[in-house]
Image (cartoon, rainbow, N blue to C red):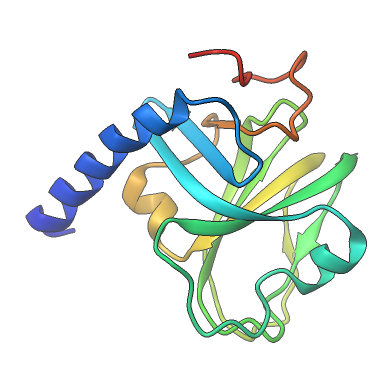
Length: 159
């Protein structure tokens, strides 16, 4: 990563830290870890139809945007890239919002199943390569109002 990109990501992460301290918003997911913090503008996919469609047939996505897939309960999940036109990072998280696995740069159009590992309740899809650039990995914590706040690793009330 070039110095200019590194400076941009550092400045964005600092700005996102201020956003993360705002009240939880269903249109935003915040993530934190020993790497810092980041926030993404998200669409929710919280029913079977929305989860089946995800980011299919979209030629582009804003840099810090994504889709948050929400399941009613933790379960084994697998994703594929059928009809998906852009590379994606898939961030799998458990019921507490703790990231358990990151699949980087899923290949557009690939129909190979991408399993999420153990029980997953949330999956955040963002632009391919961005999780690695920011340092998002297993153990990072997700903040969003869809996560049961009494069990959340990073509850909305926490500043």
